[in-house]
Amino acid sequence: MIRLKNKDVPRNCLKMGEFENDTERSGLMRMQNLVEKERTELPVSDKDWTLEKQNNGKKQWKSAKRARKRKHRRRSMAGFTIIAVLALLFLNRNGIGVWGGKRYTGKDFGIKRAVSPVDFNHNGKDDYADILAGAKEDAKNHPRYDGTYCQGGYPPDDVGVCSDVVWRAFKKAGYCLRDMVDQDISRSPWEYPAVKNRDSNIDFRRVKNLRVFFDKYAQPLTTDINAIEEWQPGDIVIFGANEHIGIVSDRRNSEGRTYMLHNGGQPNREEDCLGSEERAVIAAHYRFDASAVPSDVLIPWQD
Image 1 (tube, rainbow, N blue to C red):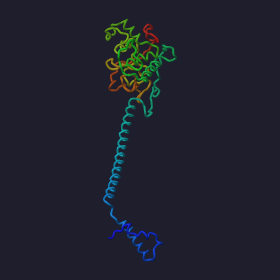
Image 2: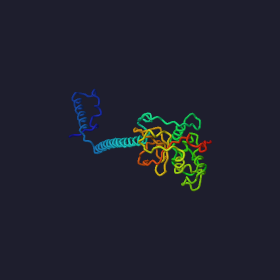
Image 3: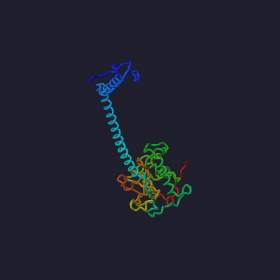
Image 4: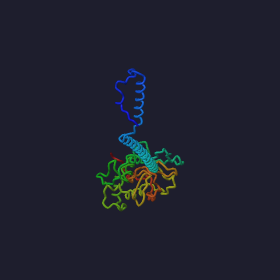
């Protein structure tokens, strides 16, 4: 095949009107047609072929990269979904009610709420309601679990243990549980075997001492968690070998058992734990009816 270049076309014959006869015109037209055909039939150079191969490779690489990203996003979304579901299950199990589940109270089971005959601080609310409110405030504050000894006896609001829930609840009702316990220890120290050296800054924060005090001055109640009508908001419960204490909430589970307001370092301080493996042993259950307590035992809170 003869290959023609642009230089093969006569420079003086570029315009069709400049030909002297039809023979020259037709010859030039054939020559131009051959040039155009030759151009279209030229093979792709090695350089062009390499570039084309590189371009195709880049397209394939980008396509694979996009596919990997899509796969990674799908995996990430699946992992996030699993974590979210597990978190929701955990929160719901601990009574936070993220799915808006029904919150049961005694009314749902025909249980009339107990009302104390005493309003010790004269705030218009009976003692049981005040004790419940104080325990709920402590649960809302969510103090960090820390039993460090505090000079003066009272830890700051953001620090506490299980027994701190109780004295804070009694404070809401107008009682100074620290002074009440300390006074009783001073009057009858033999009744408090856990007290080796009397110390008003810590004795009232020890569950063993509270067990003695409530045994003497509170109304003892059933430890059968299935006797749901006997469990009332503001009641006091001691667990295990006098090692944990809490206040009964006004909230109940679907079976009518009450929740507990307590601080064991757990995430949710209002918890459905009665009968759980950790709180299986209930040592004592009380109701503090101040009308049945000698007046000289009751000491008001002083700010």
